[in-house]
Amino acid sequence: MVRIAVVFTGGTIAMRSDAGADGNVPTLRGEELLASVPGLEAVADIEPIDWGLVPASHLSFDQVLDIGRVLEDRLGRPEIDGIVVVQGTDVIDETAFAWDLLPLPPKPIVVVGAMRSASQEGYDGPENLRNALRVAADPGAAGRGVLVAMAGEIHGADFVRKTHTHAYGTFKSPVAGPLGLVADDGVTWLGSRTPVRLPVIPEHAALPVPLLTVVLDADPTVPDAPAGLVVAAAGGGNSPASYLELGRRLLADGTPVVLSTRVGTGRPLPGYAFPGGSSEWWEAGVIFSGALDALKSRVLVALGVGSGLGVTELAERFTAFGGGRRDA
Image 1: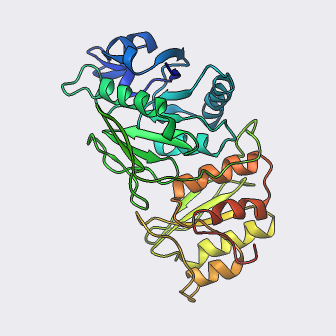
Image 2: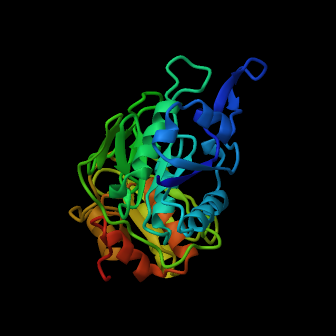
């Protein structure tokens, strides 16, 4: 039987309601969560790892990289066939992509959580965890990069997004669609993907990397000496001229600047030549994100620069998503 390591980090799936706190709080450790899921012995031999009980919205890049090193260690052991990371859903679209970028062994890695706590009616944690283990135990999951398995669907870490605050089926991939489905009868694969990797696991993320969203009648400001900048532009890559002026100043100092869009799907493209228009951003030499959204673009910049990539090498990673740079 396959052996799957399961890293428990906290999140709604590990929470119960606390009357004194007037809401859900992290409570359940790994063994308690596993005990709530009948039939796991028929899916895999499980090695639980209690990493912590951290709400996902509290996670830092250092903690995400620490979990990444746990993944590297466990997946490097020949007796471990795959791994599941159990966490809160708030930032799964960022954390899963962060681990997807790391040069980890090509064994299955599946991230899972729940939209209801263990105290709520309709608690979805046990079913989601069982299905995540089914995906991690499936040989077809190997080589597809980090996967997110929620509500019976399997999504790639590069394009998955949380699209609803509370719905069970919140995780969707608007750009590419799901890679597969998982249910009691097993896993059905609908597509494949090849992950984009960094050369090494960075010791730390390069920070700060501000994310500026273009909104009506606002001026852009960033901290001194940022490690990078991501701009979520309006439409297909447009902004007031002041945002582009800031981007040009940072580019002149060798700071990577990435242009994404605040729109839910699509990608920035040259085409508008007014001040701050997408063609001017392109001519300035910024990196276009392609179909990678602004949140994931920020993760790639922070970890890419942290791993030693220069602007040109960083731009090459974005080409895999339909982006890149004019002079790259």
